[in-house]
Image (cartoon, rainbow, N blue to C red):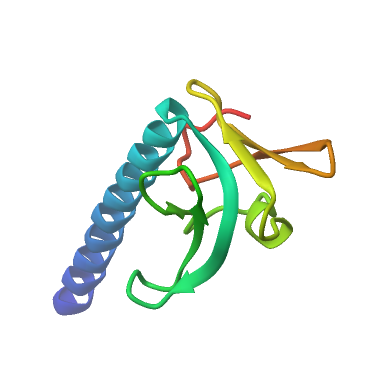
Length: 116
C-alpha cells in the first residue's frame, strides 16, 4: 500500500511540475508576443514538421516565422496568402487586412494569466 501512495504522490508531483513549467513557457510566449511588432503580407502558411508540427506563418517583412502552437482564435485557419498582417507592440491581437476589411484576432498561448 505504501508503494501505491508513493507512486501516486510522485505522479501528482510530476504532473504539477510539468504543468507549472508548461504554463511558465506559455506565459513567456504570451509576454513576448505582447511586446512584439511586425507587419507584412502572408507568403505562406505551413505545419512545421521540424518544430513539433507547429502552425507557422511566413510574412514578407518579418525577421522570423510566426508560430502559433496553442492559438484557438481561428487566425491560422482564416489567413490566406497575400493577406496583410499587422501586430502593434503592446497589443495582444493581430489585425488581418483583406480586401480593405480589417479582422482582429486575439491570440491565446495557454497562459492562465492572459486577460481578454
